[in-house]
Length: 196
Image (cartoon, rainbow, N blue to C red; front, top):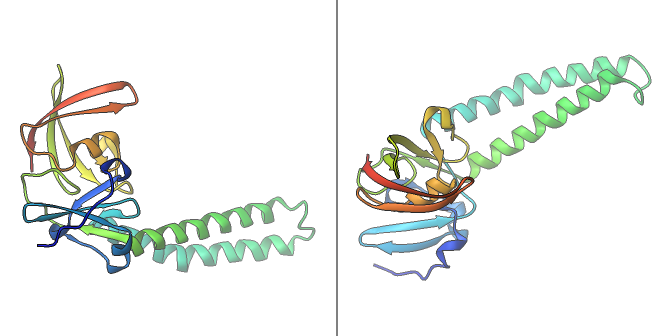
């Protein structure tokens, strides 16, 4: 086993267990690994973690934007141009804004898909991207969270980003551990009851 020196932990936002993830070769130049037992822990500031379902959803959205939305925007631009003076043409200005928004979203999705790490089934025991963790805030009721990439996070569904304060604090921890982190409301203390 090779040991690779890593940078200080404070410089990293994302953590994943390498042997559980499919890591694109294009991202390995900017990654740092720390070996813990048989697991190579990967830290990166550039990767997006996605489930297979979210990747498929983004691919479908990208296809829609490239085919349907671009065509709709082009037709709107042509119509607006036919109305005459472009300097005071509200329809033209709106169509240009729609075009810019669509192209920006296309570029963002392409970038996410290019650098994404697809998270598969997770082995219980250590919290990381793909884990479901049951925690109890000091003096509170148990809560269940699923750790996901930032593109999928949704607190209403119990999905927290791996780069959120709680997500970062939980990464690499196991059942019985206590995590302390700074939340927007101040210092928070959680006990990990279960990691699935």
